[in-house]
Length: 156
Image 1: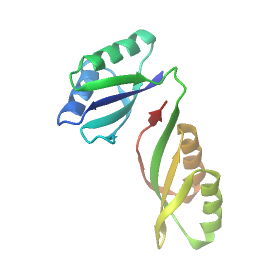
Image 2: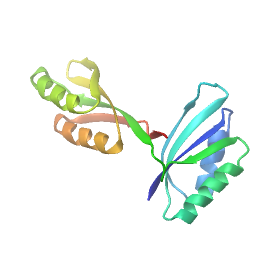
Image 3: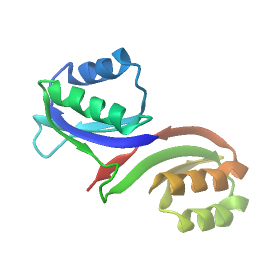
């Protein structure tokens, strides 16, 4: 089962490497990872989606994270009321004859064209994982040339 865990950490070199090392040394997979500064530039907010088969493993992950000196707080969103979102940028084939059809799809989701040139459009979309999955499925007919995702972010 996938779980969303966040941590506030000191914004110092090597912190992310220590966290990733902690997971890899124990054979845990990080399915998604997003990190950025907070309002305080000395602190970063890290959100990760991890694979944990049971509560015991999840508890071990949180305890190991809390032992790291640069970790300030650890939050498990698994059983908390929270909002999660993901940002995706994708490049699709684009022609003027498909413009109306593409815009109809984008209006259904929180998505927009941020750039287009000749036969290509770059689309930005924000949503939960299911919304992103549905959008990608709807846009497959136009030929997705490239895709990048942030991974999930969560807030209580």
